[in-house]
Length: 321
Ligand code: UDP
Image (cartoon, rainbow, N blue to C red):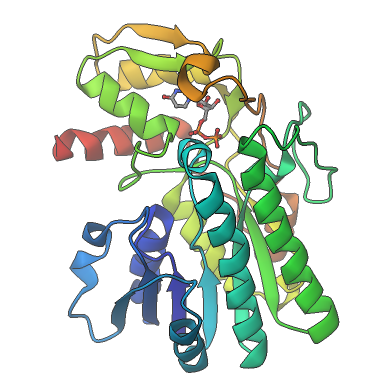
């Protein structure tokens, strides 16, 4: 199969490309390196089953020819990271909404199956767990730019479902929860690479807020396997599906674990949100997925234990420094 991966030079995208190539698939990547890195895919260059196009997904002509040539699109290209979205609100909204609209319109024109990456951010400010795909969504006001990320991905979900309902387009949407592992950068705010790099340098580990907010973390290897299986699953079409780990941990406990795994002398410090993100910021205090739907569709749920994921990721960053 010939698979077009938008955003294939990013953290999840590049691992997905490795996985697809290992399965014997042909892969084309379009990525403008706005948040991805060429180094993530450099090892695939020269493989006859791989091609990389350095361009934006907003280039309709380029997207037209790529989508015409492929069998399936896995659309990952998007603005990523809370820090990135807050610092670049306009371009983030444009990439997320217009980019996905272009991908869907062309997928429909050439009748190609398309998988759309969404995010657990879409759930907003829930305190209950686990989060199910048909839960209500709770956001703050538009003056709090963080929610533009959730709202823009939500528009993507609506548009994808509307194409499915009105045009019978083969589309599935997956909501990724916090995914971690090698190649993830801390530049856009992601907590695990930031904590690991701080720990390895014996610098203060910066917990934002009081550290009682919780997350679950998923290993990239589990995520790419789930995406691949969903791509092959006809029953996933027209559905929204969570992909996420199940081990809930507070951010202050995460800091302790990383410090211990890295054998670090770092101090753990607490930094007010306002100091990091300015006045108009709200965090999500809890985020735990239900994996029921994923399991019922593909008989697989992300299982790699958090300590194993952290150990592997610390090992990767140690060898990088
Ligand atoms: N966080 C933190 N220190 C950091 C980066 C992030 O305490 O240096 C917190 C952040 O406030 C959030 C959690 O870690 O509560 C996860 O943040 P991330 O940006 O990785 O993902 P999010 O789940 O917020 O999209």
